[in-house]
Structure formats: C-alpha cells, structure tokens
Length: 306
Image (cartoon, rainbow, N blue to C red; front, side, top):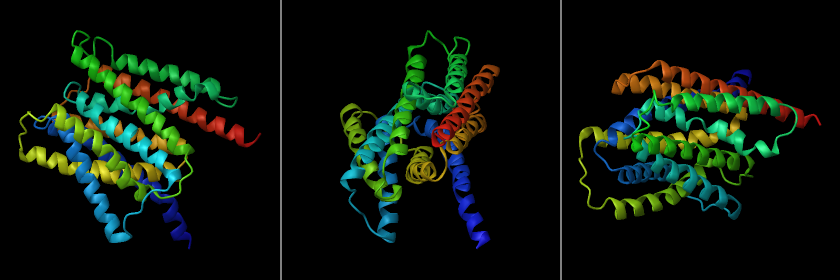
C-alpha cells in the first residue's frame, strides 16, 4: 500500500517532467514546421491531428461524452482563449522571433496571473507578489531591450507583443481553470475544446491562406505529427490534469522548466545563440515568477488560517 501511495503522489511530478520536455522541444519543432506551412494552416493541422488522437483514445476507452452545461464555459475558455488564440499567436510570432526567446515570453504567464489578481490581493504575501511582479517585468524589459531585439523591425516588435498577449490569455484561462467546478475530467472535455479551437483556425486558414503554397517536406510532416499528437493532445491534457493535481506553486515551478528546455533545444536544433542578455533576462524573469508564486502560496496559507 505504501508503494502505491508514493507512486500516486509521484505521478503528477513525473507527468510535469514529461510535459516540460514535450512543450519545451516543441518550440524549435514548430519553428521548423512554419518554414514550409502557413501559420493558420499549421495550426489547423496541429489541432485536427490532436483531435483525431483524443477521439481515438476515448473511443477505445469509454466513448465520447457531451459536456454538461456547467462545463461548457471551461470548454469555450480553453478552446478559444488558450488553444485557438494561443496557437495562432504562437505561429504568427515564431517566424519573427527566436524559438528560445519566444518560449520565455509565453511562460511569463504566472506574472500576468498575479497582475490580474492584484486588485483582490489580501495580506499574507501581497507585498512580495508586487515585488515579484516588478522583478519579473524587469526581466521582460531586459528580453525586449534594443540590444536584444531590433526595435526598428516591426516584425520583431509585433511578434514579441503577440507572445505577451498569448501569455495574458493563458493567465486568464488558468485562473478560470482553478476556479471552475469540474463535472467531467479534462480528458472527457478535451475533444470539445479542440473542436472549438479547430473552427476559427480552419476558417482563418481558408480565408487568409487559400492561395498560399504549401511545401510538404518531410520536416513539415514530422513537425505536424509532433505538434498534434504530442504537443496538443498529450500536452494539453497533461497541463490540465497537473493543474488539478498539484498546488499552483508546484505547477508554476514545474512549468518554468519548459522555457529552459526550449532555450536548450533551440540552441541544439536550430543553432540559436544564447546571449548574455537572454540568460540575464530569463533568470530575472524566472526570479520574479518564483517570488510571485511563493508569495501566492503564503497568501493562500494566510487565508486558510483566518
């Protein structure tokens, strides 16, 4: 019994490690795929293949189940805010910004969670959360300073802005996920979230990219097969399951491994240089996230004792 209990407690952390590698490696993989595929087409293929995998898994296990009325808001929130918008913004930005830097900007999400919740802060960590926000924002400034990106290039500025918008949307979705009273499991809701995401991506691809040429290179096919089954079907399910199983602090600390893997894999796979500014900006941003997350934990503890 002891071993089973330990295995149960260890399982979310093992899943978190798996998620960090899947999503971290996905940044350079997606950048490679976008060399041959337009962004909305790539996003549509990613979601469609991920949807096919999830439907296949559920068909074998227990079949599809319609979401209850109470789960519809989280289906729409994740499907539109995190999946459709997040994938579209990521695919727009990646051709303009290095994959490693992109991963850091998106994973500033915990800072925006704290900023959104700032008006509702109470005693027990509020001051530290503000301090962490300031440190984290300073890290973002370092990552976006003129020595790191070309401010004369509208593409780099737009790409960076798109990634930060994606982080804010992900933060809002994360808050919704934590407050939602789940009726079904994340796996049961996953096909409906993917279906909701697929519709706007497919419409955008048909309208905006119908005349664009697609190069079906082996690398593009491999990128789609990684993005759909692994970085979408598996990773989004892992993300929601982990968020339900672990505390916000543990989840945030685990998610910080994703941009670390993203930086390393982009350096290995794409030869992207790791500059001193990248490392300083990343370290400062991560420090801010660490301070914010530990302060949130202190605030939660203070509220439970009052």
